[in-house]
Amino acid sequence: MDSLTLWRSQQPLVLASKSATRLSLLVHAGVPVETVAAEVDERALQVQSGETSPDRIALMLARAKALAGAHAAPGRVVLGADQTLALGDEIFHKPRSVEAARVQLERLAGRTHALHSAVAVAHDATVVFETVVSAYLTMRPLSPEMLDIYLAAAGARVLTSVGAYQLESVGVHLFTRVEGDHFTILGLPMLQLLPFLRDQGLLP
Image (cartoon, rainbow, N blue to C red):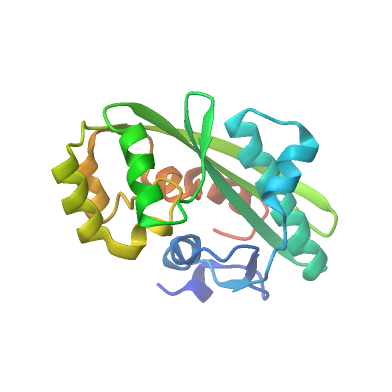
């Protein structure tokens, strides 16, 4: 069954994100997608808002991206998404180097961290749907030798995700326990998004 038999609008969904993973999740779920750039200064927005809660920051950024995308694509249904990783109240960002990734993994090793995945849908200047879902991941203790092995195996991919890992790839070797659904971990809570799209008559 291809995407055109599932999607009930003549216009594809607009994704305001550069994430290849989110694009892939939507396309494989039978949702045709066009992408637009959502120019949002995430750090500045966090500072200006004064928000410190990791889950609310994710939702705020998803909303901002959806609205930015809606401005670029008037009249269209636009999806924005964001994800934060938090160890307690400490928020992590994508590492800028392999050494920074090592330091980050040393902080996460042997502990449980949270991934907060948010999605927002906008139409013109109005957010018509938003939600945030959390997953909790426990990383096993990591010796310096294991870190060497992992970083060599993962290569440059450690710089492309906020946790310096992809659970769907060699990053799975880092964990002892995962609580949460696959889509939340990948950064797009599909099990909450799809019912909204169905309610709007966009999916069967």
